[in-house]
Amino acid sequence: MKNLIYAFVLTLFSTAAFAQGIIEREYSQYLDQDEVTHVFVSGKMFDFAATIGSGVDDEEVKELSEFASKIESFSLIKVPNKDVAQNEFKKGMKSIGSDYDELMRVRDEGTKFALFVDEENDVVFEIVGLGVVDGEFIALSLVGEMDLNKIAEFVGKMDNDALAPLKRISEFKPNEVKVYPNPTSAGSEFKIDIPEGMIGGNITLYSANGNKVRTINADSKSTSLNTSELSAGNYFIEIQKESVTMKKQVIIIE
Image (cartoon, rainbow, N blue to C red; front, side, top):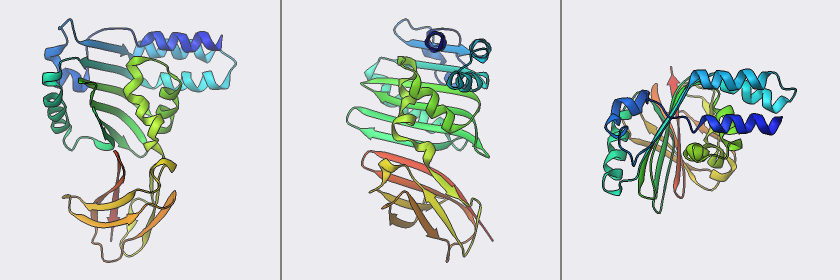
């Protein structure tokens, strides 16, 4: 029965319909093109999966069902035109603006991919992915009220091409980046937790306007940073190792 539940959830990601969110706002011109892959799953479909899973006596399936019940929609487009991929990626990165926090960016040979979240008090209301992979432009949106840790668990269990871009979360684990206490007081210190895979990289503190304030080595999973000589305001932490960059906002108060 457990395998049937997983199989059912997987079939949800082959359902096509009209796009919503960032795809509707920025990429509607591609939705009627035959060569463009377009996937949309409504909240009702996730509710249906949650209802079925809730009756199964398996803790893992129940957790999956609870997560699915909080998703309002999933949408994705994949544009196989190499001539427009880079331009659409730049356009998307610009359109995100200040509405989302950048979670992670991966840049390696032939691949650019960035994940953004609309997050408040550890609740993710939307996660947006933009990328150029194998010459194709990809944009996706997952909307709901979700725990980022649960998103990582969910996509890690799903063997489906539609979710492949989101698997970057379970692969690099940006959900393990923690900054606390946050807000923190000027003249004190705060801690930064990072994924094990980012040990050996650098941690850089930037001001809100992008000026580099301080850089330290990420030589362990937990690092402290002193806020002495820093004025109150918004800052962000950037953790970088090789082709992967992760970000987290931190607020310093008087």
